[in-house]
Length: 527
Image (tube, rainbow, N blue to C red; front, top):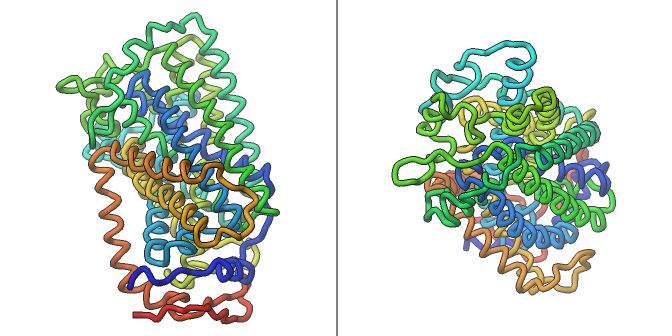
């Protein structure tokens, strides 16, 4: 039976205690981690892609995505405070639905975080080449150094996005140095971008250029663009949903958190509520001042975001100033309404702040790999912790290189949609895990309990499925293709090497100490 290996919670917690990461993060740092990921990805990077899918209906898209995130966050808050170890949805699934389904979740999370980090690296590159190089120093890099190939949705003449590749590698180096140091840098960057976005909201909503007529038509592609099209308000919600993985990243840091039973729920829900307001206000300011209507293709359907067709349209003079074509959307808005100097300042803020988003995504992805390796499902070398830096440096380096390669060749719109396929699956499984644990381990202490769990958890499942079915068809196909690759690895390598499958939980001290065997009450026999 492939569903026979369910890891007892006591064994999971014992493993984490023996081979653990250093606990250094408090509630405030956790909330900053969440804000660092949420504020940035959707606002600085995906505003243009979302507007191309939904026009002014982007505001409704933020509400739809936020509603799904709220119910998902409640499920995460209960289960993360109950199981305060690294691994997020992977670990939660291991403790409830067994090793095989846990593997599928962990494998999906690898896709989610790595692709999302690549997407934000591409967004950072747009601000760097526009604000720093072009507007500040008058330097125009050749197209072949600033975008991927046109056939991949890049730009005419594109070959490689060199700035995106470089920033991904720099952030990887920072994460290898240490978690505490990364958190301190992140706190400064969060302050910078929250200040910049507050200024943006004030300038745009009070500007004489602000005109409510720009919101008409509000839904040029409708609420539903059609299954598999990825357009309309729901299609835009499915795209920008990946910006909300910030609260998920908070739960992956539970093992490195002081007093996780109290701090994890605060970090999860606090960061989500704080950031959702910014999404809506910034989108309203951008669309109300310069408009946000999509570029329509044949049959009155918007060209797909991140597509070769849209790249060709944006290269035409009549669309040069369109919001949906900008690689640095918010700085572009301020320049268009007469605040060029402040627009450049906002561009500087994005350049400083977006690395914090990449940092949190890479942080979360490497911790998933770390725990899967610690469970024996991936090679032991991946969970090696550096004796000085106290971080899983091997897997961090490998992940950073792959993220940099993705950022170098693919556009932000395509990357965001692909990342969401894994995100939505993982969130769905967390909701299922909460319901299973209420039945199988209802007496275990929970510092946070989901109110009305039998309503909230099913709503989370339904919401995730609904958004998944509104992704573009190519992005939906990516999840089963990626999963098949994962199945091959699991049955060819991981299942036979699983510590749980051998009937023990093998624990090695973080800095190369001794090994211990913790017997499992009801071991599963390897096939």
